[in-house]
Image (cartoon, rainbow, N blue to C red; front, side, top):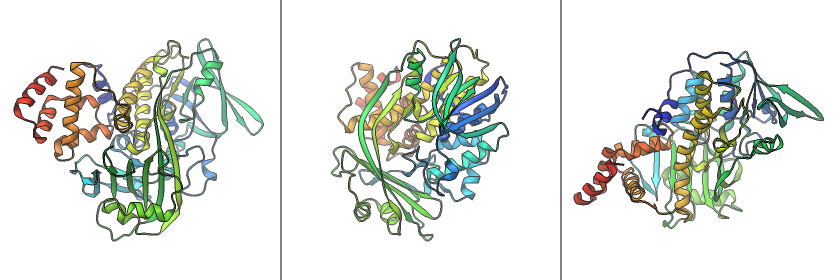
Length: 473
């Protein structure tokens, strides 16, 4: 079906640069100057005479390579997934080449290692990553965005919105003791996980969205180490652990970053990551697969940095019966996920793709941006399914399917997941969903399920029963 979630997702992940753009806005305001806000500003630059990004931090004042105060996860390990890479290249042609020239590292399948319970999984051709620190990549995107002649960044803390005739009509922000009002023809909230948009809606007489949460209480520790130029093994690695596996960590990740360094992260549930010294961090990494052992051979750069992710959350703006016109919300301000799955930056870039399609569709700007919210829901739901499923199982929060169709689909998905580490075709399909280049529905393709079941050694009689039922769903 042309408007099924899978079809919409496929359309949004296009790599074709936007065409048929029309300038219909005078001034557009973006709240937040992180990755989500910068890519949103790039999209708005095609449709507005002037785009103003309002950001409370002063990025130019931060030490080189340091995370902004408004990005508490900025010092943790980041990896640009293929989905995000494709969208950034779409909106900023040549940005990947620029990143690599500036010190980022290309990690293809031959230099990527994935482990499940310390068993290495099969490599897949779609493992094409860009390794760098979050501040490095964000700085590059900021330079590209602010190079556009109609985009500017101002320093200030947004304190509210003003409404008129059912629409947002201006943004209020504070600079020191002064308050500034910016009249706006369109506003995008990209202020992150701590967004106050729900409060500002309520203050204006609009309903608050319901917030869906998965209480995970995941703790991360990240550290950087010098990287040897002689290492010819994997450059990017991720290790995940099943609930029954006898390790007290949820997972680990390691990536190469600029300045010939490694970034290494350990993830724990509950208090397992507290009071972890550099020596303890290194000792734990030496118990992990070889790439982690190599990464901690160098000298530590700086300190071990903690970060807590209390929950994954999704603010359901799309479900509100009333919503102001000329307003959109992107990135973590809508939904934020377990960082171990690395989907934050790619999700933000795909939200910008939703914004681009919406603005290019010739919408009635004096009506709520329902089309945008529905497009965004498809992207958020895809990432939510991927990132929360594993956490729910580990935390004992997963509920068994309530219908025969649900049980058949669960059986099919289990076959795909079990075969993915041993079969390249199945593994490529599963990782495409995690990389945000394919919709989760693609994993229900009968031919893929049949192949996975045979890889898993399921008896032919059972396959025929389950395959026939799966094929009809």
